[in-house]
Length: 444
Image (tube, rainbow, N blue to C red; front, side):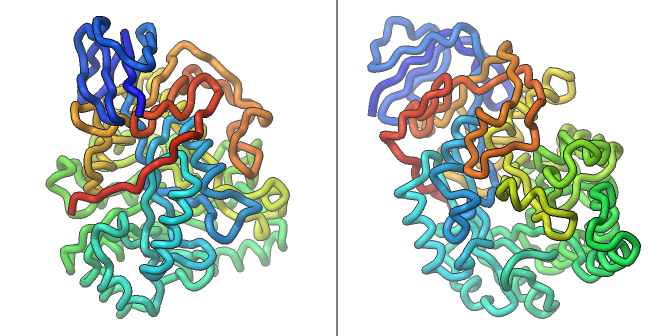
């Protein structure tokens, strides 16, 4: 590996911004801060006062690999991710085949070793009939066990109460949940279908995937977790009402934590008129008041982690009517610029963004030696130009699906450079794919 010297950086890590230099050696951070201009290195970069953040650790993506190569694969989506400053990802199990056994997990690790430009880990999926696989899971093998307590693909909706009790009681790792009440959603769908037929206006998506459906499921999950002392992580919170169930304690004192996703922090229901099915996702983007409550929860600590839930579909699929258009947005390339808009608005500090996208996910999942700009840690870094305004254009989209719900939006900051394990994989629009990402190691 090349030694890298980064000069004149504004380094954001662990609640502080310091001005100085960074030295990377053998893929790890050797020295942070001070004047290191006297040192030699294979690659010297003067970033001229630009911000250096720890690379984002995205705790929720759907890279569609294996099983849906027309939508995405680990190479294309990890390439988009590193261009967006994401250096590690945790991929969901609703692939084809489903990731519900140890063998399926290992197959995905083998795929990632061949394809991924970012570091990677995978969830074991829960079903109504794989509790023995969950009980036997090596805690170092998976980032967590994913439970779809709402609608999902294939056999991944876990709706038998005795199975949920067993998962929450016996899982050897963190349980991550998608919380929506399926019977309530199905009833809502039927009511709107009777009124509008197949072409339900998209504005009613948050009424179909309703606040009550979310709250009923998340409160049930939290009740199970409290009863069994489960390490529970509730994914993609979307409602102010649900947030009342979480507290502001420091992350290290919590057994129950919560995630918000960038699109729920950025969009609200007024965007359906323009974006339509392009922002159809589950759980749904809801009211402006809900969005503002989620932003406040990021600040006060009820939300511990920010992820993407990156979930690409083809343009043709998305152009269908309400019931036929699949749910999910491609987001990894643009997640950090979306969050930096909240920095420019004075809502999120750079230190808070680093905490929620890097430090906290590393601590929450026990990721070893990543998530901080500290000496001895792997050099997973992103250089941000806070003065580079740019418009999202379709021709610049790197997702395999070839589109973005953010087309036409102007962002005030851009990712200039991304390092993964000390390797400069992305720089000013160009990629160096000579090194692949690494499997995340869990300190458990």
